Image (cartoon, rainbow, N blue to C red; front, top):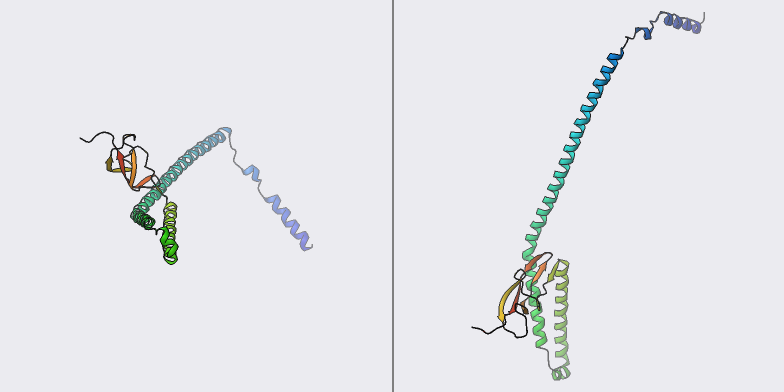
Length: 208
């Protein structure tokens, strides 16, 4: 007998001696089957409820983290604004001094005779005035890029939220409480008033 035939014969004898596996399986009744299914369903429901609670906790935690992040960003913004405020006030004061200097140059403008006879003096004056004007314009651009805008007050009713009455005047034909002149310019920084405007306010009537 060849090796191949011997191997086949050995495998056949094994199959004849092997027990019937299907016959060896225990019988499962319908009652036990439904009991197991009910237990499985209860377990699945419990796991589902636990998962839902975990998911709700996750969403609550996510909302809490988002609120804390916004609060933290707001605190940082407030700190930055407190640090920038003194610097912006200094810039505004410097801008006002430049404006006063430019106005003074305008009043010192040489007369027509001097401008004709003294060309060198005229050119020097115009160069200084142009440099002052360009510097002032550059300052205005810097302030605008930082979110600063001047307050418009002349011709408007007095508003203590953005103005300070530095002087009371009596002008006929002008409404009571109307701002007739601006002594010192006020500035707004976004939604915040950086500096109050100092104004002259009209109050009709005779002084007592």
